[in-house]
Image (cartoon, rainbow, N blue to C red; front, side, top):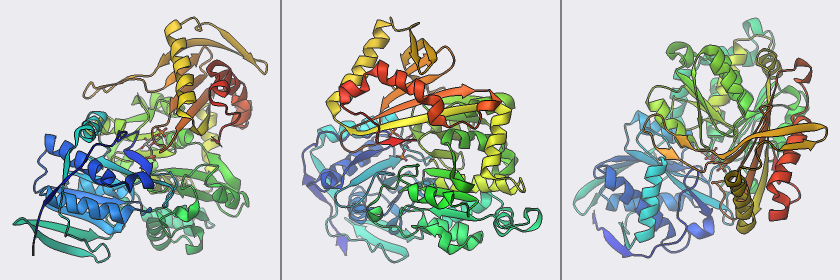
Length: 566
Ligand code: G16
């Protein structure tokens, strides 16, 4: 049957500006008439303005949250109407974000549309999200997302093929003819290509020996995972249980659910507290949690020893040669987002490698990787990854840690981290999140801090809290000039830099769906070996008090305490 293209008149919606990583709004918003269609049309128009969309290959899939399958059907109809040649779609519309990045690269696709609100809750009353990844497999850069936003503001019609429905259950190719033009959809297993990639990067036999306690390891290394009912469940079962021999019972919450079981699929100490409690019992040697779409991770050691994402990146960097991919290709350079503590900087210095400090957002790493200057990077927001793809990668990070542990018989997660501190000193880090504040109050606070920058009088001022004095050396709003294409990204977070090297950062999250989330980051460097094992919150409390004093956060937002502390 020859299907027909239809043009549907529509009107712009306000606020379809992609944030840190795509458009994230409530499901209810996406369900409004033409809301999703408008955004997809804007993506396709933006792509068509710079590339040849006709006959192209696109990858489409998401983290399985509520509304994913509806969105896949909408995208398929609209791609057919735009004469896209073929879509590669995960069975049931499911792909982890790292899996999409891999498939785009592996198949030389033009790009991909990922359906996820990442770590935000899911379900009919929670969040949904859509983002576009470009042909390098990474999130579209600012210049491109600005184009998408521009299209959303002037949209008058969208194109679709109303009578086309995709069977998302059955693996294989489905062929259609649309106004005489062939259009193909291939439904693939979401896991297998990703597993093949991991087998290429890591030595599975070595990790298997660690887990089973073979050879020099002498006793089994007991591992557990929490997929928080996100997309990683099937990936965890296949890789860690089937391939590497971990016990199936220790792959927790591994059935993806459209509402993530009513919980927040965010791998941090607050939302992945069940894993923390399980680890605190002392029966497991290693634990990892992953977020809704599988790009974030949290690493824990025996008894619940918490590895900060900043330390995780540094330990992986310092032990990179334990990972076959890096042993073979070498390390080209390291990078971290600006708010991430600088533990990796010390590793880079010692190894004589370039270190890049970019704004928050994985999209800023892509150019550096494409230019062959960056191999390993990470963010404080529980993201770690390498140039094997162009997204952060939760499962990859757990495999990286297990590879390092496999190469150090008898070592524990804690001993790897403490040895690292002994060598390099420790970067203490904390993040306070004030979620869902009123927009006006959050804006006033940021305006107040901006005024302090312009005024400049605060520089040199001393702040004393709990017997510690901090003298302000510099205050600015971080901007970044991409060394590859010279693009400039301004207003990326207000930094207060103190004379003793301590640092405070304030920024508004770009991933929330409603209200404003204020992120307050604090870090300091401690070379004193006697202080290495101190509690980060105790060490950083005086600095955070200074932050609250300077920003007047409480006064502007009415919040007495953060919703999440990491
Ligand atoms: C996204 C980006 C990350 C970023 C994080 C936090 O992560 O991919 O690069 O660090 O948001 O952003 P914000 O502080 O603006 O909320 P994800 O896992 O949500 O895609």
